[in-house]
Length: 415
Ligand code: SAM
Ligand code: TMP
Ligand code: ZN
Image (cartoon, rainbow, N blue to C red; front, side, top):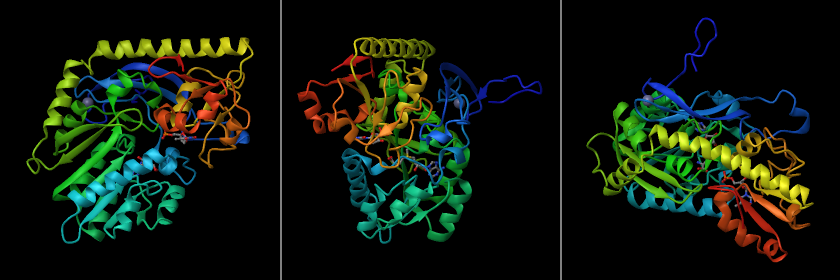
């Protein structure tokens, strides 16, 4: 956000094209979503205004205000990509696809931006193929190194990319998953891609999809780390602006519905039919139109009222409720809805680094999964709703004991 000499807001400029960003939803004062706290850290917790708008020129949906990247990614970063069986399987399949289709030359080289704990690159390392993860969060980078993955501890930008090119040569594939939409410095990112990518190389990234959020009401995907909310239309405009071509886009079943984009140098690859189909789908669905965004804003408020209403009703009836999963998303929804321990006394999560901490913003305590299975509650709010299948299969005894799941995306529902 830019301010004038009196400190008044001059509005937010699009990080891609400099156009005006029109705000359409405000989720209030929020923390950084992976900033899990110890009780003594509650005082002085970082907050910022979590609001989202769309560029009136290139349509890119983005945060109105952003949190400095050093506050988001550091040696205490809690998210571990290998935390679910579904993720491990997905990224092994990705790696195998790259090995079979793109890393087939004499001495291929793949770079992953945001390799986290090495969930994808460990398969590449096992195959003995040259690779490098660029990962600023030291704790997860060390987990990747322990799996035999080569990692450079750095933020990816134009300078880092030039250094990698100098040391290792051009990359046949540059990959990023749930990371490219986190990078606010897009111009520097694309200069880095330009410096590092081979002439016929591809830049592939998998990110939360705008339609899943706007049409599927996954409003909890909005948090500080997600600076951008991509659609095929806005990614195409972004690629062109920085001298590249979007050649492929396809739906993938991750995080409730993502899209995998493939970008190449202009003319290097043949655009796919699925890209045209997705662009046409977005056009027909009026995905990036002001009326669609306005409807989303109203629906978010309705879900908040319904969820708080249901939890209040259950409390009055003396029912026990806990939260299941403490993803970054749960910070958005619990903070926005003002959910405190009188409505949900604690949440459980399988990530050791989150246990014993408090959820950012709402400060609900995070306990290990045994706190759930040792004494089943009457209801469990499924904060990790994108892993519903895996969790419900694992927790059949909860249902058998009469327990009920509460979902809130795309609407509040008791299952
Ligand atoms: N790729 C994994 C996945 O899909 O599960 C991890 C995604 S995690 C949400 C985002 C990762 O990107 C974090 O490990 C973070 O430290 C890293 N990251 C954030 N900004 C980055 C940047 N500018 N360059 C490289 N990595 C970055
Ligand atoms: P994600 O939605 O960003 O992948 O995060 C999911 C969170 O849910 C992560 O903190 C791990 C947690 N989780 C469990 O606690 N139990 C489970 O069975 C699964 C699949 C995830
Ligand atoms: Zn723009």
